[in-house]
Structures are given as C-alpha cells and as structure tokens.
Length: 184
Image (cartoon, rainbow, N blue to C red):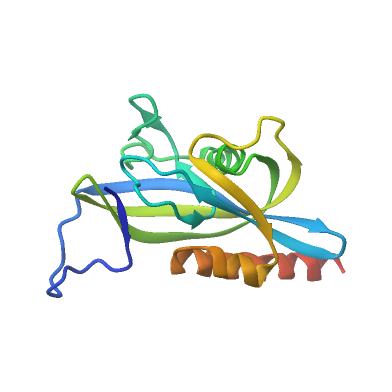
C-alpha cells in the first residue's frame, strides 16, 4: 500500500529513515474553451500499490524497469536526468494519464514530498510544467487513469486530492497569467 505524507517526521516527532529517492515529472494542462480556461484533472485507477483512487495532476517516473513497475536508474537518482528527459517524461505522462497531446509553455517548479510504498519510505521530487492542450488522443488515456475532467480553476482545485498538488495548480495559474501579460 502506498501513501503520501506531508512531512518527514515520524509520529513521535523524530526523523524517519529514508529508503531512497524517486524522481518524476508531470504537467499541469490547460485549454481555452470559449474565453474560459479549463484545467485537466485525472482520477487514478485503483491498484495493489495504490488501493484508493485519487484526483491528481498527470505525472510519472523518469524511467522504469521490471515491466514498468519499478523505478529505473534515473527515477532512483543513480543517473542524472537531463532537462530534455524531464520534459519528455512530463509530455509522455500527460499523454498516458490525461489522454491528450500538449505543448510545454513553461516550467512551473519542482516539489518534494515523502511517499511510502510497500513499507519503504522515499523522498519524491516531481518537476511540473505548465502545458497547453493541443489535441485529444484517439485512444484516450491509459490504464493508470480511470477518469479525466476539465474544470475551471476553483473547481479543479477543489477536486484535487492532495494539498501539495493544489499548490502546484496555484503556481501554474500564476505562471499562465504572467505568460498572458507578456503577450499583451
């Protein structure tokens, strides 16, 4: 069972052991629909490692091994990923989890949090990019997603399960507004 933790401290306030690091990237995708900006939010599929569905932003490991179930050497931090790999991963994950082709507008930020998977604790780093939807994929989203929705900002913010990803959405909105001011 995997769970996301907000802090790096144990129940009694002591520092807990970290078993490794995981590196991922993803996208905060928007589309314009009649003068409105809508944001992509995806619902995870239930699995053995993740028994509860959550509403989230599309993201995933930089690389994997073992039929895609285990982090690869870049995702574990053993090999340094290039910016190109991080960007390509974000675009791939948006396609796989969101069912859309998108274009990167700007880097938003890299966030850090802790997760527990199969009793092991990892420090996870996720680099997020602001992306604009270009088109839907004819095959739709992949097996890691059970549902997607496009929502106005406030409703998207309410729908997202984790506070950390809500803050990333807040940052994405700020970056988009800054980009739009540059164009005017």
